[in-house]
Amino acid sequence: MLKVNALSFSYKDETILKNISFHADKGAHISIIGESGCGKSTLLKLLYGILQPNEGTIFWGDNQILGPDYNLVPGEKYMKYLSQDFDLMPFISVEENISQFLSVFYPEELKKRTLELLNMIEMLPFAKTKVKYLSGGQQQRVALARVLAQKPEILLLDEPFSHIDNSRKNNLRRNLFSYLKTEEITCIVASHDTNDILSFADEIIVLKDQHIIAHDTPENLYNFPKNKYVASLFGDVNVIPIAALKPYATIEKSILVYPSELSASDKNGLKIKVTKSFFKGSHYLIEGLLNDSEIILFNSSRALKFNEVVYLNIALETINKRLKE
Ligand SMILES: Nc1ncnc2c1ncn2[C@@H]1O[C@H](COP(=O)(O)OP(=O)(O)OP(=O)(O)O)[C@@H](O)[C@H]1O
Image 1 (cartoon, rainbow, N blue to C red):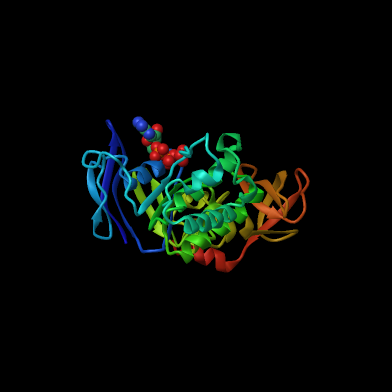
Image 2: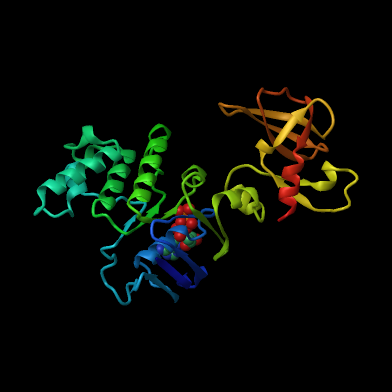
């Protein structure tokens, strides 16, 4: 089990992380999210032992992970880290990069393992290609296979799909995360992309202003976001006053509502004047104004005309759910 206890870190005078504590069971998948610059990569570097914490401890089972003040060469055998620079050998082939740290004394095993990983990253046709001739996305896939080759017990991934195009990304995500589950490899993933997270993470940690401000399952964080910052990490969100929804309401509270939770009708509901329609493939995202001033975003199956008036409704279940927070 990974145990992170009361970790704090500063770059010179600037405190980046304060009192960070969490643990991850064997085989668990934990995602670290938060706005750019909140310290996601810094946290991964601390976990790997590249940076020295000011305070706190990190343990993998009984082994303490020490920072550079105590351990000059970072990296333990049981842990692999894939940073945003891929750390590949450009002048050797894809398969050589993947198998570089595997034992040559077991050639059959080396071959089998390399083939398995080449298949997982869908790069078999490029096995003999020198890495320097690959695109950024292809290199990122090879880097993933390379860190997996030695079967680490824990894997730290920093934006692992950032260079990979959408058509490949979905397959690769499914392949990689189901492989990690089967092999019971613990993974800690820093990511911007909610698609990397929602379907695959067991738990999500949200960082803001040096602290963990939320730590929960994807379902709970999405359904019961504790504030707009958390909800916004999953996409657009509206803040709607209860009084605007129910004129007879006596509470002055507002609730967070995702665009997909609003449905438009020709009468009864929040009166909105449409300003823009954005085509999103499966639907249109509509931007409109409430009381001629407040921007509201909602989904619609068709594009709506500028200045068209619609009435928005929210299911009572959603209102009650969000009022709980
Ligand atoms: N070597 C460094 N020296 C000083 N400050 C740094 C250094 N590296 C990062 N920082 C600062 O630390 C803060 C956290 O950076 P970090 O890269 O961990 O954030 P992040 O959440 O991973 O961001 P992003 O999502 O944009 O990758 C930022 O304010 C950044 O400017």
